[in-house]
Amino acid sequence: MSPMTRRIAYALVIAALTLSLPTASARSPGRQSAGGVFTVRSGDTTPPACITDLRIGGMAALTDSALVLYWTAPGDDGMEGTAALYEIRYARAPILTQADWEAATPLAGVPAPRVAGSAESFAAVGLEDDGGVYYFCIRAADEVFNWSCLSNSPGTRLRNPGLPPFRIFLPVAARG
Image (cartoon, rainbow, N blue to C red; front, side, top):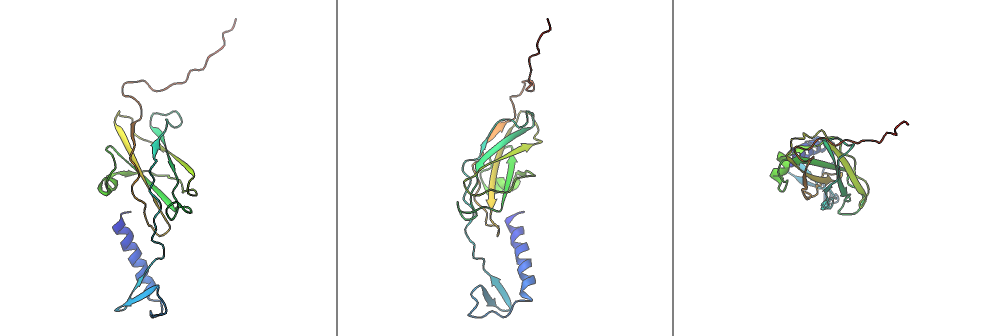
């Protein structure tokens, strides 16, 4: 969901709430009257901390189309508390700007955040093993959709092109 879509959805919710709210007054600083329209200010303006240690681990479940991402959980407000959600995206070029982020593909099944400072991981599966490089980026949001900045954007190939798939061979005892 783009930031503009979130703003529109948020404005629609507020518009629906204005019908049942009492008239704003000087004693209710959370609402401000502006010609019959109420502006509601959220008390939470601090986003989760930026994730700066996103890294790529080994292959997940010994497949050629998956890898594991690791990072440290940010908090709801900076590095305090627990963020509400993560969004992870991938692309074939580094994800360095908001435009890169918008053009990148979101991954499904991303886990819910744990308390700030916790070690987090996620297996990105179903990636096409064509020898190309995949780059990843993650953002966290709090319960009122204050989004963290873009994380670092590490990249990797799933395996080296031209190499056979990884196989495990188990020794078998010879009968004598």
